[in-house]
Image (tube, rainbow, N blue to C red):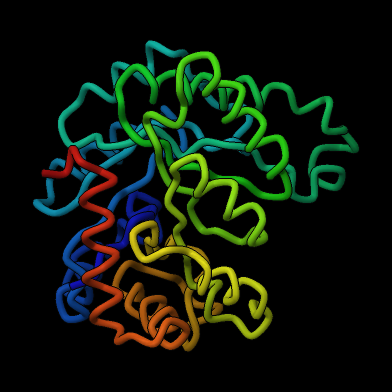
Amino acid sequence: MYTDSHCHLNFPELMSQLDNIQLAMQAAHVTRALVICTTLEDFHEVHGLAMSQDKMWATVGVHPDNEGVREPTLQDLLDGAARPKVVAIGETGLDYYQMDERKGGRSVADMEWQRARFRTHIRAARQTQLPLVIHTRQASDDTMAILKEEGETGGAGCAGGVFHCFTESQQVARAALDLGFYISFSGILTFKTAADLREVAKFVPDDRLLIETDSPYLAPVPFRGKTNNPSYVPFVAEQLAQLRGASAEEIGDLTTRNFLRLFAKTH
């Protein structure tokens, strides 16, 4: 069995095809999925989807790159986390990718709003004892620094969590593992250009490994460029299996056990 630890089934291109996707998941032996919240405005949809499906769960949070949306307060996140089937805080973190081009030339110093938002999520995770779903893109130094700072004031590490859709270096992976986090790999792992990332995937210990689609984005080979969905997560498992000398089924079972351990509220 396989578990998609990070997907956006509430997005229109997937929600409109939900019945077909569920049939495809069943055929691919994908038995569980975590539906990720990216704005408070969409939380009711994410939560409603999780509540309507036996083996789906939800998170509550605001994606670091979303501007012009409702800014989450600590109480907003605590209230969402108290709902049934909400098993994590996020996705949260920092995203500095193409910052100059997309943000009108603003500098890292101008991204304090992202860092403040990230700290709010960490504090919610600490209070609820739920794991964090971390998004970091070209911001790993600041991401790790904030996690460590917040840990010193109360323990971000005590909640733990996952660095999702990991694309960073082995050094960053080691730092995340040292803080108690899991590492999740997406379809990017199957891309021809991802040789360095495949080396990182060999390095992550068995008991800290997760797989995901991040659908509708980042469909794995042989579906690259098409709309992704959770039924494709076995292709990520197959790539990991080749790297680690295992079968795809063994990777599926291993990462499902890890998912259930990390997201303890799922059972």
